[in-house]
Image (cartoon, rainbow, N blue to C red; front, side, top):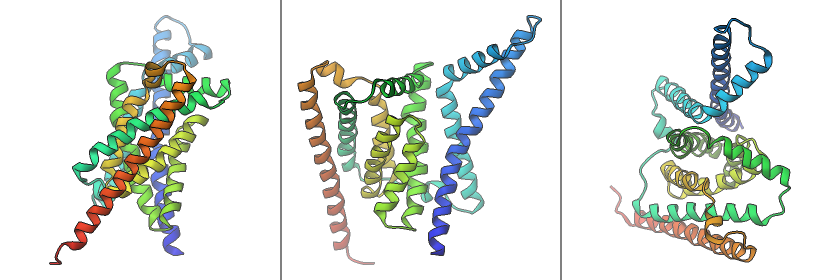
Length: 287
């Protein structure tokens, strides 16, 4: 029981670190943008109004949202590195960021691409209330503000790396020491989903969290789930289904079924590779 609470506490601390860095960066951004707006308006010889301050803060946050996410990611990893360095441990080793077999790259990439199609088709086919769908689209569009470079660095590199190291690396491994693997996977995935804020985003992020846990566990490396996450984020902002089938519901159902089938095949492929690798290791002579 003591180990349970110790490991649960560690996992909770890593989640707090992730959320705390985002909160601190948000506060710093608010202060910086407020000071900037105030200086600009006072240069005109007048005091800024509350409305002007709020508009200035909002515009700054929207224009720089991706860079703020990058800064938060860097700060999260830096403080995690400092924490383990003080304890004379290595962050990457503790988070299980280790090389994995190259023969798993292809199924992981295909699984990620198929997952994009599943998510897109599901959103199009389900009777999701318009208000919730508009909130989701607004959340996605807010991440597409700013330069292409900022978007790519934030969504394709920074977010996948820091989120996988925290949730599939540090959090999952600590929870797995305190409870059965299924419970650890579920809890870490729910925590991951909740950080996405908007209802639809929370739901599908949590489900994708389960898939990424599977990839990380079966490949015995968080680098594998980072690869999946990067590919998904790279293609997730593109309306791939719309390009291929338009608004045809029958075609969309067909793509949904095929995409789910591809996901199932890739999951089976990864499982078989994992089992084969274990068999080969068991046949190796002991030193």
